[in-house]
Image (cartoon, rainbow, N blue to C red):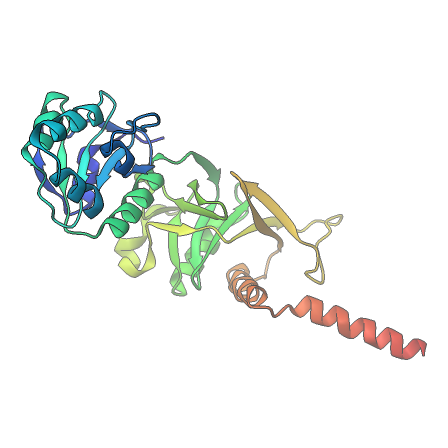
Length: 308
């Protein structure tokens, strides 16, 4: 898990530092955002003080109606040792007592012109992408027709060479050799390259190449959702593969089951073209058109007709 500080938020978003610019190194440990509406009314039985504290119009208006002493008392109760920062949305300027309580506990105060709901969503997504549990998988991750495809297989089977052919065909590289995955929500796995491997590829005989330099910014992307795993396997005498495409294989990544296809590798087979077809076929299935199912229904009807 990456260490995230308030400065990372300031660098990512267009925040105004109202006070506490010397405290931007405070660590944020959770992607959850708190809107302390109940706490402002005096209810502190459950106060998630370790979260980013976001003040929207409702919280700001309630605070502004308090007396100076009441406001200072509440803000001192909100400003805990583990509270990372206070953020005010919609360009609202916090009262002096907010700044005083924050300064006493070395808490930075930021302001944003963004609406509260949008700001909360943006913060949650950004923090979750950095703080979520990550796993690394060996393979090549590439965007083919908008689908994130992880190409796996034994070393030397031709993963990088296949990915290079796909990049030359207009598709986009996300990561080569090692891919870091994290779970964005209950059904979505996102993948990206480690910083040291971003935009580069290893091709046997050539070594390391910079894909963005050779093919332009349109040939790479920083991250992509994982939709499909394609496992390249050497074709042997005793190898068995699904001939109709009716057998569904899945691989569990974190808490999500990802569809998986095994493709035999043999001299003369254009694997990059097969992967393009696999991507198109996968998209067609997700839209309700399943060629294998249709063929099976035709075969069943033919058998029934011949029997009768």
